Image 1: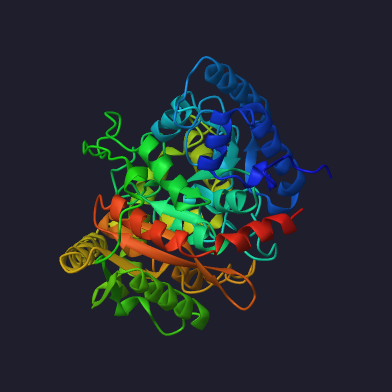
Image 2: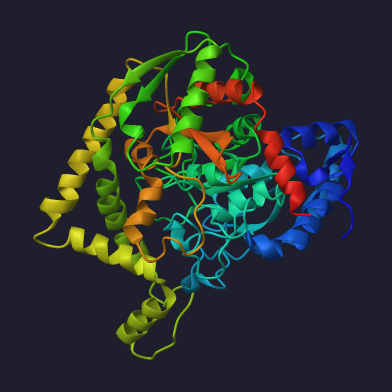
Length: 498
């Protein structure tokens, strides 16, 4: 295996976005050299990790060459020449978008999602599309219709889901950062299990146009990065109103990187009793409580709080989200795009196409949602769930009258073994028990590393903010990150992959 090029002793594939930008601006590296290094890294390790569904090598090198040309002419776009990956549920013009499903195999969108288009306008180099649970429905990336992505920390364990491909790619040094999507924790949970940083912005902060819908009132584009500064940088590029998305907010976009260095002295951090539950891994609780104590040592004030409807969040989510999924996935009929069995009888063609094209977890959620919306059950299930969703949202609103940030675990355990939970859907769903509430309420959250268990697997700290409270959670996360050194283990593990 060839040795990866280095910059001041650090492999190029291990650079953060802001480190790479600084080197590009100083002329120490070229975008082509950086991109080629990432493509070489993918070729070297992705056979074991399986983070990508599509690698766009030729396109990436062409974009990198164009970035070098633009920089030579004085262009200094925010992401000029930076190689990134995109979860395969976001439309990419001219590049296959499958949503991890056989039913969309071969589908090439004629346009790009707004989030992707904004990154490319800022100079992003697209490395490829990352693996995902089918239609983002899953917590382990085992539900992909193509491959099972593996956790770079232990190749026998899951990377989390549904953005497991993106998290594994960043953790393995196969992308400087990646886009994910978060419907019930699908950015934060895999980020925690892979020891990287996952940011779920507030609902409406980033346009959903071009994001293939799972649960439309939950879905939000998010970022998976190596550090908090990179998360702030990417958010600033993608955020802002989009007339193509009626749910996108017209609120002004602050400079998120400028507020990272704010003093957190006096910051009120809420510690919810409901997020430290029986059955969670003791090392996770210990690490998170130690992280909160560390923030307190930096000048923050810890305030015990209650979120009394937390125990209702999981059943509410799996009623409302599946109901939305059953409506959203009705468009896949084998007639207009994607896979089709080609039967001459229209109704038989639709039945067989869906039967063969959708995987078992997608079928399970479609049936759950259709049942909840059916006559005689709508009021008892779907309507009641929406009412309880309002109670969960009010819990957070009342809590944020007392505190600025809420701290809790991202996941109840570290990464579990591949196949360990596939036969027990309820146990799998519980992997998201600490993340789902934020999607119900439409608020923001970030996961970042705060320790490791006895097996050396990463543990995630989740910091939660109110709606449009991204500046505050980013500042708190940055203060914690910069005063600890958990990232050094990630770099060491990346080197162990070869």
